[in-house]
Amino acid sequence: MKNSQDFLRSLEKNAKMLAPAARATVEANADLCSWLLNPLAQWADAAYGDRAFDDAAKGYARYCLGVWKSQQMYEKKGKYTPEALPELMSEVYEDEGYMVPYMWAAILIYPFWPSMISHIEMYRDHFLKALQPGAKVLELASGHGVMGLLAAETRSDIHVDGFDISPPAVAVANRLLAVSKHGRNVTFQVKDALNLDLTEERATYKGIISAMLAEHLQDPRPLFKVIAHHLADDGLVFFSTALESAQRDHTFEFHNESEPIKMAEEVGLRVTRLVSDAGQPAPGGRFLPRALAMILRKR
Ligand SMILES: C[S@@+](CC[C@H](N)C(=O)[O-])C[C@H]1O[C@@H](n2cnc3c(N)ncnc32)[C@H](O)[C@@H]1O
Image 1 (cartoon, rainbow, N blue to C red):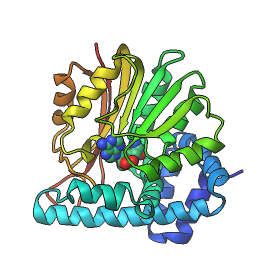
Image 2 (cartoon, rainbow, N blue to C red):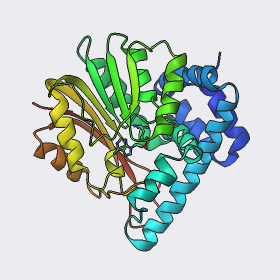
Image 3 (cartoon, rainbow, N blue to C red):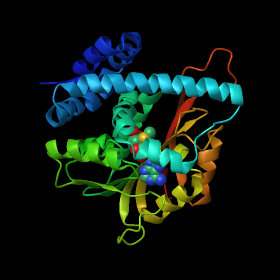
């Protein structure tokens, strides 16, 4: 049966330079990483066959190189330099050739980057395990769909409605969903998180996931309004974002942890837990790339 080792072996074969650090992170966090990678390996193999592992490794390598280049440019220019939204839509979010490898990378950074490990722990132990029995969960920017699938894998009593603006990402999510045993509990659809137009009444979701989306928006404030609108009074939110981390499709630049906290507080949400771990800064650089995750509640 395929497992986390298949991802690491493919990385050793396709991106040798990146493999030792990824293996060290996986081995140092064996419980959390296998919780994510073992089911992912089985879904990936069933949905795409053996080539999934090489594709994932190549996607991860291309992504890491892109991030490195963007961070160099960020240091030079002193600010993010994203393309305009129409170009990002056509050349990133709607482009299958770009999006599919990107989606493999987007999930592999959780177990492979030390700065993302604490997100797995917070998501599993302080969000999923804390959801009320039978909770209805809204996932904004579900991307590859793996967060929603892991939610159902861990909590078979919950239901997840996932939305993402990218048709190729939703296609990946639905392909993984089709081979998982969660077809009755999880759905993925193409929708803009800021324009959901759902039939659900306000405050119906007991859980909301907004993982690594805010930095992709021109302005994240409307996202916090969407979250506050849909969150049940006794619900909880898993929110994460990148700070001072340049990437082709990162448009909103957070510098301080206090900025997303303030945006959350402005819509009546309270932070109950927060982690913000730093990645590798450019040598001599002025920016410190970080990944922040928090649990939010209404009260
Ligand atoms: C870095 S990925 C994050 C995917 C996943 N949530 C995760 O944590 O790995 C960013 C995702 O945001 C999606 N996205 C960007 N703008 C969006 C919007 N306005 N509404 C919904 N999804 C959006 C992209 O298509 C992409 O799948």
